[in-house]
Each structure stands twice: as C-alpha cells, then as structure tokens.
Amino acid sequence: MTQVASYQVPAHPSGLDMRTQLNAIVLALVGDNSGPTAPTVTYPGMMWGDTTANRLKRRTNANDAWVDLGPIDNFLADVTTSVNNKVNRSGDTMTGALTLSNTGTISYQLYMKAGSYNPHIRSNSALPGFEWVNSANNAVPMSLSDSGGLVTAGGISSTNGTIQVNNYNQFVVAGAAGNARLRADAGIPNGYGAGAIGCGFINSAGSAWNIQISDNGNYGWRGFSYNDISRVANNGDANGYRTVFGGGWLKQNEYNYGAYHDLMRAASEDYAWRIHFNFTNGYLEFLRNGSGNVQFSPDGNLYCSAFGWISNKANAGSRVQWDSGVNEWGPINGPTTLDMGAPWVMEGWRTNSNGNWVSGAQWIRGVVLRNQ
Image 1 (tube, rainbow, N blue to C red):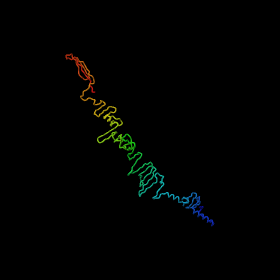
Image 2: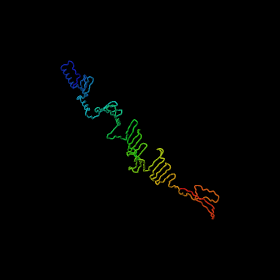
Image 3: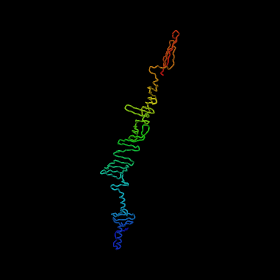
Image 4: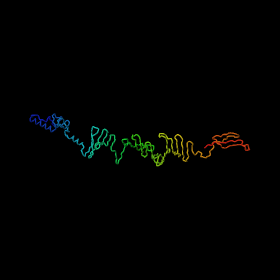
C-alpha cells in the first residue's frame, strides 16, 4: 500500500523525480491512499484506507470529516450483514425481535392493513399495557394491561367455546348506577349443614351474598333460605329434614327432633310459642317457652300443664267419690242451732229412741267430696 502526503506534483521537478512522484501518486490513488494515519492534505471525496482501524473511509464533500464506509478489505460487508438482517417487504420471515421504540408514553404503531382497513396496535406506558386502535385512529376498542386486565368496548363473545373465570374471581356487570357480581365458591351452603361448590350473586359493594345456589340445587338468598330437597341422607327418604309446599299444602319433616314452628316477636329472640310434632310419642305439642304447655295425644286425649289430662276429669253427671270419712254433728235433743260448713256435705243422719219409737237425740252425718 502506498500513501502520499499530497496528490499534487511539486513545481519544476527533474524528469526522474517527476516520474517517481507520479508513480507514487498513482499507486496511492489505486490503493485508496492507505496508511496508519489520515493524510495531512485532504480533498473532497478522497478515499483513505485506515490500516490502524482496518476501515475504508471517504472524505466528505465539504472536506470536513471522514465517513466510515466499511471494512478495508470488503467495505460492503457491513451493508451485506445489515441487509441480511432486514425483513423483505413481502413474503419474508423474521426470526429475531422487532422493537418499535419511542421516548413518549405511546410507542410507535404496528399497522395491519387490509385494503382500506388499517388498524394498529401500540403499547401505552400509562396503563401499562398495549392497545388496539381502530382503523379511523380515533378510539381504543380494546386494551390489555400488564396485570392481565382486558377491557373491551364491544363485549366478549364465544361462538362455540367456554368463557372461564378462574380462582373463584367475580364476573362483574357494571353500569353508571352500580354493578352486579357473579362468582363461584367452594363454601356455598349445601342444605346438609356444610359448604360445597356452588355459585351466587354478590351485592354491588362486593361485601355480602344476595343469592346462593349450591351444586345440588338447594338455594337461598339474604334473609331467607329454602331447601327443596335438603336431607341428611342422600337417598331422599324420610331420614332427613325437608320443607315442601305446593298449591294449598305444606309438608315438613325433621328426623332428629320432629318438625316444628316457632313464633316470637323478633327474629333475635328465642321462641315464645312452639308448635312441635314429638315423633317419640306422636304428640302434637304447644309449648310456651319457660312456662306451660298443651299436648294432644294420638288417642284424642288432651293434656294441659295447668290441670293434667282431660281423661282424668269427671264428666257431667258423674258420681263423685268420697274424700273423707263420715263425720257427725250433734246431738240434737232440744232447741239447738247446728252448723255444718263447707266443704262438708250432708250424707245422712242418725237418731236413737227410748223403745217407744220416740227419738231421744239426732246427729247429722257429713262427708267431703272431691273429684279424683
């Protein structure tokens, strides 16, 4: 390689000297004036083979800087590498990452043009997430945040698939006045005194259940619970507890205690009166909490805690049994006032005579009567 200080031949050289200088200039031109340092005399558009950096450089037209063209042995190598890394405008496949970078809040767009339809997607650091922008470039009909939140303006539909919400999260239908919430739960009351899988509606504040439906079909809502077939056993027979009603009738059963109705003034109070079917003896009981009771037996007898069984009471016209021995008041053998007070009643009288059928004295006899 040859490098000369200047491409100009000094004035009035000798013939041999001129030939030597011209040969050096020609060789320098042919070899891009290659050397370890830049030429001291530069010209617009001149070439310099920088052997220190092993780069081919060209002087700017303003002759104020060197422009790096590429490797000194193959200055198109950088261009070839760059071109090989590019995606053709049609039908090519990109194997590396594509970055659309911008310093602002909104990234550069990726357009997907189909005829005149030209929507695009972009990232938005304010979400943060990415957005789908409509073809008119005046609305964002869909966005997806970094945390996985999907927002759509037109709703979500599935023609033949399943829309699934995992981890017992809520499905919320919202509006200006509030929202309605639906979600599944593993602790829905199942009618057996336990919790099981089911679903329900939650109030707008998300703080309480409004309706709960267990997987077996039993359901309840706030302030009321109804079990259509709620039982202890799974076979649906009498071994359970159930309330069934229809047109004009109501049927109840409770296996461990017997069906009952409680009456009270306030729901927070214990019962004041209870109507109870006692399955151990078949009695229908009216129970006053902490006080008396009335019971109907299967044979029609009636028990009242105030006076006992009706069957033990005397009917109208019944003879009454004595409740004492016979007592006498007397004698009456002259002008006498005699009083036999309650509860004694006269049972009879006794008299004696002198043998001539003349009464010498008389005694009144009395007893006490009581219904036993």
